[in-house]
Image 1: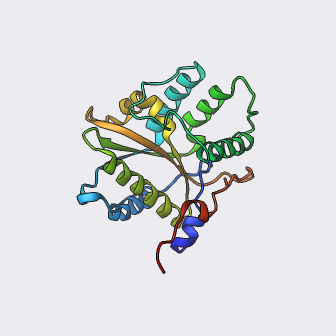
Image 2: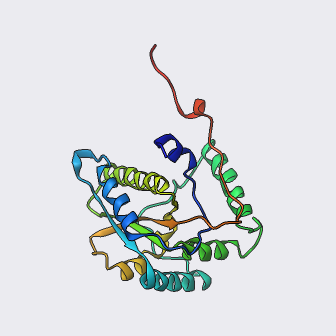
Length: 221
């Protein structure tokens, strides 16, 4: 699979099979991802790879919190700006509508938040979840570096025939995650990434993208 195909076929999968993922494959992907660029070569990320019983226990604890209507731990960073304007609100609403439909959850369902949180807490059935952390001393530039690292990992996973789903949702249960992975107090959870093989027979969601002319400007000849 070349890099163009990896980029084009990468999407957030929300239905994984229970087929195990080889530790050797995960190690190969994460070793290759060390080549991700970072300002000053700080390489500010630290990734915990969680599988097996530790992941099962994490899913049990997080799902219990979700079903109990737990609003989650105080956020260490906002997921979105306080006030979004067009065209960002338009893109957000369109993508949300597609997600709800693919998950079989009506948008006006009063239990929608709890149902979505519970599905996320199960990592959509994925047998592997990667948790990316940064030292709290890091700034916006290093958070950008971490984003490049996560994207590099997801593209390499595609090259291995795997799918993924980035989940910022895990920051809602960051204390539970830290208890399982044993993260040091100086580390802040950036996101989780569910990893696995796509479950067969499930409708595939592919959210739309803005036309390049909306986001790219060519300057010069």
